[in-house]
Image (cartoon, rainbow, N blue to C red; front, side):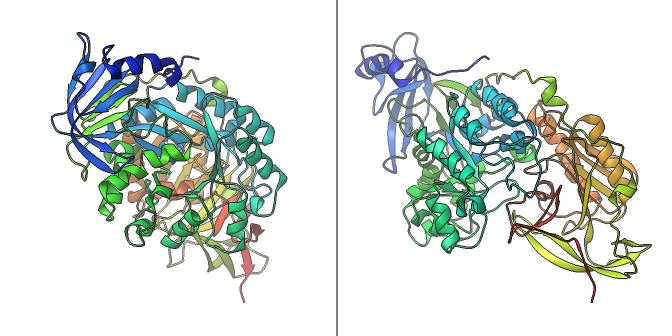
Length: 603
């Protein structure tokens, strides 16, 4: 495995000291910029930065004593010099890209550090998949740290994954060079109820001196929340309101506020800082997650920081939340997250702290992007065939597989329907009357927006299909959308108004080895192929984004007007976020973590 490495501080210390003292020349000097100091929340004009061995040796009013005959000079010309941006919580797979192509997409936006949880691929390929993601991450010219996934399955007994992760896997991974901690502990009921397996995974992480990621997706801030906090998670990104953010930081957790492609949770929580005046050191910005279209057209962490500023946050405080706060949380304050001696030389030049144009990006002392264009290579891992052939349906599906039989003699049934909520991860548990025609529950004659949803098992070739109903997409006509991105078990989710189209879409993904497809009136009108684990493409982000845009347009052509509806689609099987989800074992009420009947008798 090729690694793009950086020397440790100990290896560089003699040179850094010599450069700072003027006894040795720097590799690169940035001159005459405004130093945004996230340690002191100051902006210091007329400052220089001297870099050597990929680290910062000197930062202060005059670095002329650090300049030699071969020192590269970068003129800041009065621009702001800010630390490279950090994404504290994300899943690279959700961008539909491999780590290399994800890095290529976000580097021009100023992201130089990422803390990633590859639990998507863990559900499909187990520890081997995590290792592949970890290894490609270490090959990149920026800092991609890996959190060992904690929950595969995310809710034991309520879903079946391709592979399972246990305490022994966690203990092994804690020894890998790029592992920074434990991925989000989604099985919060397990922690609350004292699950030996969950607590063993947390203990293995803490024994290794690493950080435990949290995921408390419940509005209950009573004893259950306090029990979860006592279980060891150090952060949480599932808050959706000010009270959630305040509750977490009061318990010593970091509140991670996310702005992804579909989750807009910054504005409702940042008031804890901007209005309530809480100490911003406990607040962190993240994406969780951005798909390729957002990355190409809108940005990454620069987008999140701009949004926080637009919500009333002081620009330097917003930058702290995307730099030093993140680094400190993961025990890396001496490595990254600020412009200070000894740190990795990750620096952005920008002419405006509010609009935050990313004009020049330096990572590990090297220019990696200028004016939105990457200037460095991002090496690819050699993904094996075992990672590319992961969709196993077991049979050719037909429209009959998507029929929903009603009780004998019924003319109408009450259905438990998954209600999609725009721009939020939680769903609503709805109940709707569904007419019965020919012994089957049918939605065609309904005035309200209800269509069918199905989970197609794709790991063990069982041929099993779990059927249900979903509301909120607004689909009309004969159509179907199928995806092998189905958090977190990553079976196949098919949503449609036509059972024939649902079968066509499912079989199509079986043919190509995974991805997302949209069918209308029996014809495929969009396809995003994701051959690696059925989750990612190793094509460039621009190409994937173009295909994803056609997918969005195809969904709109079928009547869908939701913002980033694909992200909503991908979470319909996530059985750890309330209220209602679908799994290979049936319909799950996440409020009680129990399976429930799809149909109930109409009164």
